Image 1 (cartoon, rainbow, N blue to C red):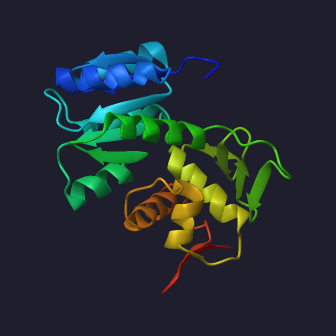
Image 2 (image 1 turned 45 degrees about the horizontal axis):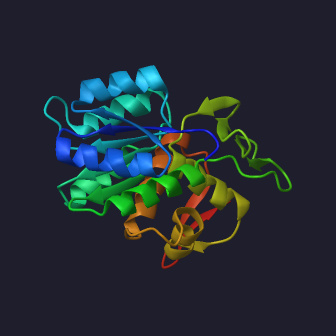
Length: 225
């Protein structure tokens, strides 16, 4: 990495926080620790990090509320870290805009690998062909600036939401299976299930409205346009 990127670790267990700190620094990141949600939000405001690793079970406010407050201000990538592995928790975290979800116990090397994968996906793509994709008359996706506009107004999307929309837009008119979308957007290192796609599609429909021609193709997956 040519520029040191800051990762905020919001975790109240000092042993876990120190372990993540050690591995992140070993991978070339600058790691800052916060033992509470409020302190984590303060560090995010002060240091403009590249990503936050966020535990759900914090002593003051839970990680879901922290994620809501992060999302209210921008699209900072969030990796949830938790001891809970319930379906509802996972879906709720993704609906709030989390970019990935890891349960304890975990391999710190796996966490570092996932952090790198999220940050790679968040980098502007090299310009190939058109850098702006139009979806009908209402929507424009600026690939270089990673911006989406609906009727000229900017719409804030989480990292994965943007990547999913861009992938669908690059394949307009083609029905893509959930597995094709997972491979194209999440990559081969994704460990989750295909319900992740459904959650992100719901978020896109919620944020962009009925004007977005994102159709469910029964028995296959989804088609844009």
